[in-house]
Image (tube, rainbow, N blue to C red; front, side):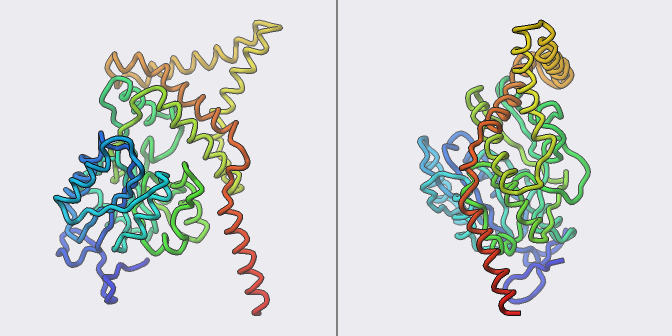
Length: 362
């Protein structure tokens, strides 16, 4: 297990009941773009942590079209723990890397402008890093909507029918895993892997976690860590979100062979099955079995899942679930091979050259 250090070589591993000086300093990094609706609350949730050690927040500001920058400036003006760095591209991985570079501390907490951290989040994460020896710990993305449409999306995002069996969506037992939501990292692993791959506009968290595991690192999931997430508020925004999820998951699968998962293939298979069924109906009505079967499964599943929703949200759920499935599927199926990033090729070349150098030296 790695020890925390304050730079003097002294062990500063966090534990409950320890004085403030015994808790490692933490940097919370947050890429933000057009987050005027949620930013102030998101940052205040971080600043209100019950964490005893030093804590700072680094906001990576993209080129927002709303009042995000003004809100960020007002927060900085009232709390010296908050700083900003520019992120001209507005892309999440470049913002994360800029914030990591500006961060001063050895524990890096990744947050979003629309994620709300509970008051014990940082303390619990630091305890888990200490207890498990993991390089990254994370928990559940607890989707919570306000309007009826948002509540339906939140329900779909936390159901097996909507997103499949993934612990950070649907919950489960604590343990080592392949990926987690957001993440709380040891800075050393981020520096070793040169941070996030900026060629990945989406799926950058999963891609980074895959490289952590390839490098011998450990990812740990715990249901003790729960983050409130605000889902998309319009059907158009949901379509765009899941289209890009599918598109970039295909990029990850192309780049990292062996990461194919049946859960990721289910939405494309469903879409192709429905389309094939409609084509078959041109020559025989039996083709309706495929789209009819999918529709029946969605209606039955939505009826079961919607038992935890009010009636206004229930009406949206049978539309939200196939929208997520088919948007993801279209993105996956149409993802061009050119998106496999050049950065990955450069990493592979570096690995080959390193190997050749080692052989020559021996």
